[in-house]
Length: 369
Image 1 (cartoon, rainbow, N blue to C red):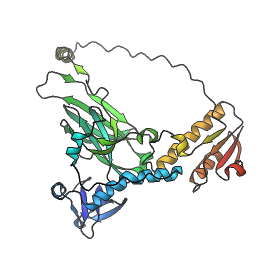
Image 2: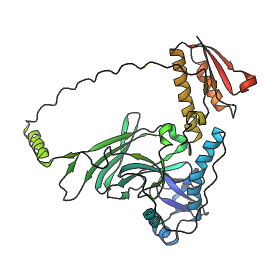
Image 3: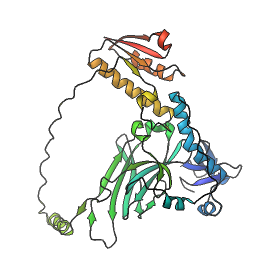
Image 4: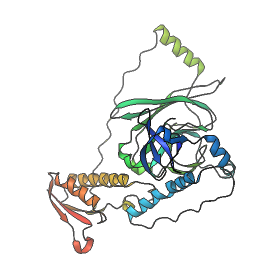
């Protein structure tokens, strides 16, 4: 029994995924209706892969995937104040995923990817996808506060995906670690050697939710997709004769000294542009191009506060006298956070509800020093 295993509770019909091993007798299970509970090991049983192959997905698994695909969009629509998208009907009959993949056009180019797939509406599994014709050796780790921790190292054959390398909760999006992946493509009996590629991914709300792909190759399901290899069609190759010369020089101690690092020329400072007098912090105004499906409330609030801080700093830098932030009334969470930040800023003369006849309590006027 390991982290990532799908299990079924013996005392009920619920299924879930093991997210942590709490002790020798206790595990933490994320139930498909989106909450985690501690469970005794003797009260759960692993759902074998053979069972899925023989009988198909259980009703609980199908419901969880359907909920994962729609609940995020509903939450984002609710936060934005727009109508939720209509649910897509689920087909009970039709071609298998493999057959569908043969007829559906591929929209993702060849390469090696980090993919995050919904295991439940809030729980994501982290996997590597090798959508190339070569095998690849990889290492996967996490970096938190400058401290790296290696988690996995294996070989990934062509056209395959790794086992789940970790499980992350959307509600903890702003606390996610940076993913650090090292890749070394190779081909048995091949004539080309490739350089080691190291990629570090730090996820941001604005780019994360626009990375969703509806049908990822190999996985044959929806996933948030991030390409790891810079040149998927032609990885950087090292000529064999040059590699032999370099190794010989290094072993003999006659390798040429590396040239001294040259500091790049500083980029010219960009002019700071003053923001508009009224700034709308609603999600549909910040991301008019869409791509907000699946955003948790925490991620939305983080994006809104980042926009607020950037706008306020530009207003101060350009000597504006006042600015209005439109945050809406809603449940008041964003308004409270803005007022908390404003009350700590010494460059603010005062702030108050702006034009109640126009905005009600949905906007704040900030007077700058």
